[in-house]
Image (cartoon, rainbow, N blue to C red; front, side, top):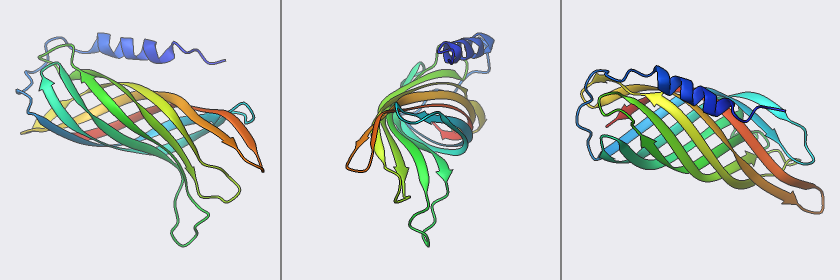
Length: 193
């Protein structure tokens, strides 16, 4: 059985290692946007299906508003590609995606380190005619560090953990109950703020 405390321990260690007096952050603007690429380890399972762990390419888009030096809010659309979609073969393509409301908290006003929390919808998509799609609710926590690279742009490494429900599939062919997922993800984002 996996230790559910691992994400909390990792996040605590990263925050403790963050410098308390890094270079001064410029005064944040109202609007922010970010695009992130990365790689994740995704584990899907259900009451009827065993654990299916896969490495997957990750892509994320975020935008929102900065309230002050310590808090920004936004929306995040992200996902992990499990099988490439092929427009010439409508039976190919598998992914897991999330649509979340997120909050980034900056504990130190003079440093770029932040903690992220998010909550929203998780969607499993599979174009294989012998598979079934489903959706449910998920949540995420992450830690990151914004390093200014010029003007209002930053490079932002982010370590995140997500988990949630992907719902049930009940039809004449199959019953799959309590679909769930866990994912660890490491990425780099370009952020405008």
